[in-house]
Structures are given as structure tokens and as C-alpha cells.
Image (cartoon, rainbow, N blue to C red; front, side):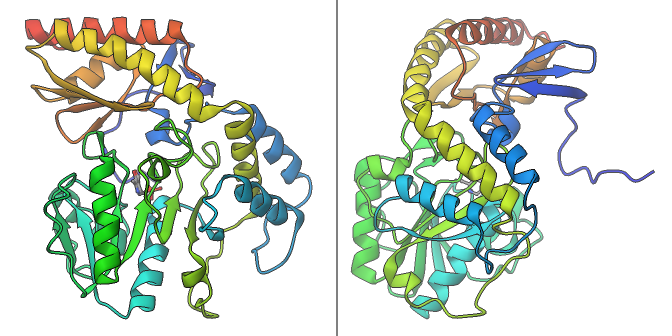
Length: 388
Ligand SMILES: Cc1ncc(COP(=O)(O)O)c(C=O)c1O
């Protein structure tokens, strides 16, 4: 029998279906989903706008690259027009975050004529070779070097330590909130300093909004709230409501110099993916997703800060931005995640000691109360040294 390569430890849970903020296993047991498929289902499972658009699209056109004109391509571009920063209205569609990062790196390297990239300690940008090259975690990189483009890694959130950036750097890539590293929001001062240094040395600024963007951190695009104007933005994960779609949005200066044949993709811009994106943007706007993420994020964080006080021996710190939540523990997170799952709450981790919650925007106060009480039980057991 064909088996799946085990790059991740299996979660030991057989999922039957999912709706909104919940998933059910094959025995009919319900789980609150704070994992959302690595954040992809931030709009909720089977989001009604996304499902309606996909259904409609299935009836007309399901495979057609964007070199041909078609209605859903027009709609996708029109929808993006409403939410993209005004200076980044040139896009190309891809399928995953990593692929979009690859394109961002390709474009900036060729335009700049420079060899190197810069990124930040803790930064995560994907698993393909160039995206991995600008990803910091040695555990992910080990055994895969050399990467296409050497990367200078600078300390995150240290505006005073950017001197290493010089005129050999083609692009600096940065997350407005580092997700994989354990939920570390960038400060405004840091982001502004990065942009300023990029302008001084003539490097492009690439903002990776794959995880923080599209409302999750409380704003459609987090970097706007931080007051920067990047040359390139990369988005993915939840933009298609869980359907695989990503895109790169670039400035006019980059777009004007795009050459025929420089890039392409068989599935990038697939009509179903574009329909999902149109549905995703509809949901984002009609449901005020960023506002709800800010509001529910505050409620969840305030309850979690009480938990931190109660379980100081187990939890070191709470970090959050909108509905991106990280609880740094004083011990390994894996047993806690198993206990949460056992009690009906799905969560994920960032590294080995940070418990990460990426709930969908539509969680209710009742879900928060249930989730926090499950967390309390797991932390009590951890304090007593009990494992499932
Ligand atoms: C900030 C960031 N960039 C890029 C990626 C890569 O996206 P994908 O897994 O869709 O390739 C991720 C995935 O977690 C991410 O969090």
C-alpha cells in the first residue's frame, strides 16, 4: 500500500468533516479548531462565500491558465483592487506561500542584479529551496545547503542592528508577525528602520504576509499598520478560504520590467483557485474579518493572560496579535498539544516550547471559554507532571 512520507508526526486523529470553527472525528466527536490546517482555514471551514464561488465555478471552467482571459480572472483582479495597497496592484498567482516567496526572490534578484538576500533570525518563509534559504531555523535547513543565494540573518526587532545590510543585498524579506518562530509581532520602529535601511542601500523590501495577512493579525495587511511601503508583498494560506492559492503583489517599478518567459506556472491562477480567492475576499469584506479578529483576539488574550498568571510554573509568556497567539512554555509543548487534542481542542506549535493558536475569525466567546478551560486542565496536569 502506498504510504505518506512522514515529515511530521501523525496526530492520531481521523477527521470526518469540518464546518466553521469545528471539526469532527469519525466517531462523531467535535473539536474546537485552533489549528485550522496551519492557519489556512482562518475564514472557517467551508466558508459560505468560498463554497458558493467554488460551486459556481465548477459548472463553467476549472482549468485555464491566466494567459487566456476569463470572467473569474477579471473578478479576482477586481476584488484584489479593493484590498491591495495602492502601490502594489500588479500580481501573479501561485499555489502556495513558498512558491510566492520564490517568485518574490527571483524578481528582486534579477531586477537588482545583486546576489544576496537578507532575512531575520526566527524568520520562516517556506520549504522550497530559495524560500528555505531565507528561512532561519537550522533544523529545517540542515542538509539542504547550498541554497540559491546566500542570506544574511539579522536579529529580529532590533532596529539598531541593521548595519550589516549593504549594497550586495538584493532584497530583505520580513514577516510583520513572526509565526513559526513563536508569534513575535514586529515593532513599528523596527519595520520603519528596515525600510529606511533598504532605501539607503538600494535593496528591495519584501513583506511576507502569508501567515499574518488577510485579517488574522487584526488588519487586512499587517505591514500597513506598521507604516511601511514594501516593494513586494507575498500572501497565501487563508486568502482562498483554505483552497490552495497564493499571490505576489509588486510595485510598478518591478512590474514595468517584467520580461516574457521569466516565470510561469501550470496551476498558478487556476480558475477554481481564483474563485476561492474571490469568495475569500468577499468574506473578508462582508464579515469585517480583521475587526472580528482584533476583537476576539483581545478577548482570548485577556483570558489567556489570566492563565499565564495562574500557571507561572508552566507558562513563561503570552504573545499575540489579533488571532495569532503564542504561549511560551517552560517545558516541551508536544505533550500539552496531545492533551488538548484528547480534550477536544486542536492547536499547533511553534518550535519545541511555544503553543500556537491560530483560530478562525468566527470563534465565539463560548468557544474561547471552552478552549481556555481545556487549556487549564492540560496545564494543571503538566504542573502535576501527569501526561496522557
Ligand atoms: C510567513 C510564511 N511564509 C511562507 C510560508 C510558506 O507557505 P506554504 O506552506 O504555503 O508554502 C509560511 C507557512 O507557514 C509562512 O508562515
